[in-house]
Image 1 (cartoon, rainbow, N blue to C red):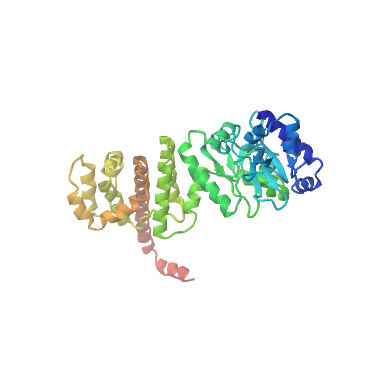
Image 2 (image 1 turned 90 degrees about the vertical axis):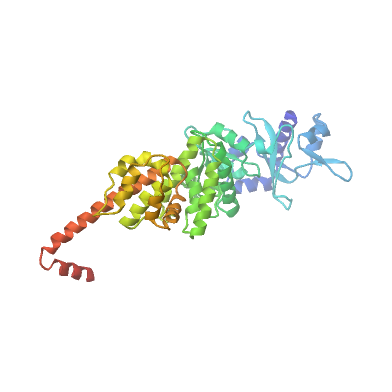
Length: 432
């Protein structure tokens, strides 16, 4: 069958040289004669391959098993599978032809057709690819044959065969490049496929192996971008590609949302992260979530606006999550309170707390709504202990800073009060 496939590829190549319509199409799409030769592009006319194969000693059965011919259901007669199509051979890493993809130029349907699965070709385990990867360059994952050919001028390039990338295909890509760049079309279908690929990759992540995602300009796939704007435009897109974590984050949280939408997005993120099998990478994704929630202008994590609310969150979080107390006890014991605050008693109780002690007195002091408020905060912190600890210390530092700023403001007001006319001057400036 390998010999039959090579025979067919050579015959398709020979037919292309005499077909002006196919050559004009390739020229119009910017494919050079050298690329036609290197990718072994050919032309399948309306008939002739089966007869040529017979002449060289290949049986109809052999060519049928290889996916080159098929039988009519009515009569059982054999005929060429690919007709009136530009032919793109799908080649193994060793350079052997295992299948074909054909693009119709006339009214043939479907527009694109791949070989059926054969003993040589299992679609979900193979890729259309460039055979050479420039040193120091990433591999681009694109959608179409022409995208691969255009991208291969500057990068390694691969494309799934009319389906979303499978786990087996991703394993093949990772053998070529540990962090390939996904450059799918910018239309809805392309972005949906990119998201599906991102989610599929999560359980397979391992140290050093991931994906990056590039945003293509509107209405331009990689081939059209290179043909219209040149190498520099594609390089700019590739250089701006974002990591897998950022791609998923942007998909969920890039726009302002209602509280209900935020809750739905958080649940989706947690589902995705739970699918990551590598425990340390899973933990890093949880920390990534927490850090981005703090920085996001649309963050769902509430930031306490006042000293009292800071106090309530800091102390209430320890009541709700007592495993944190041992981890923050030193900072807790140094926690200051302005004036004669009753919160001092809560702090002292927590500092001296031992596992198994009762929290009822604190719950009564915090009030009936405290658990609801603290639960709302903790909902948006990943369940990892380290993330809770980081959140608590961050809030503690903000609280201490706020206390210092408040005390400085009080002292400044006292100084200003000693200067005649100061308040009137400040008031006039504010009105001005």
